[in-house]
Image 1 (spheres, rainbow, N blue to C red):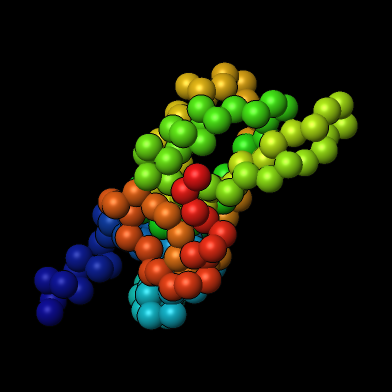
Image 2: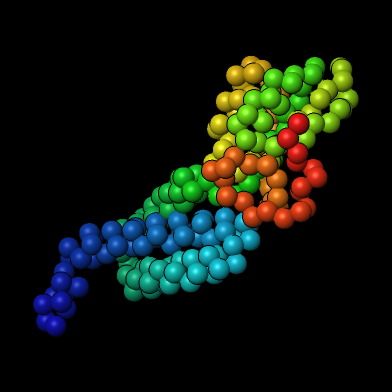
Length: 198
């Protein structure tokens, strides 16, 4: 106990080890916080509260050390630096997880069956409708995809029509549809009529 006490009271612990622990702890809790927000937006009812429990536990440990060493400016910098780094790491992890679904809207000023053909060949469903733009009539192609397939879909669009105008938005929930076999989506009858391969 005396050895541990001497370590905790040493200048090395106060000015090096403690700020480092606070920095790492803050990275962990902010990263978890970023993921928790993503899980909440994706309606992950089990993951969101579980991640939230660990997030708050780590935060309490970090803030308690800050309050105990309030006269140590390095702890403040470590706390702020960990917060910034945690946001960055959380976003990077979310990008790697590629969770959730997206809707891609492709706007074409003339009929282009080649894009629809390529989407169908890649296993994606689509729905096309006629629309009216400012300068001409347009065809709008809708396809709902898994986030991890976005790069593949954008490559198809660009290869078929360079400079094509399209938009991408998050989708909170998807039921049924036509997806590549590698994409796992819960299926029911809701989208069965809307997304049929043409």
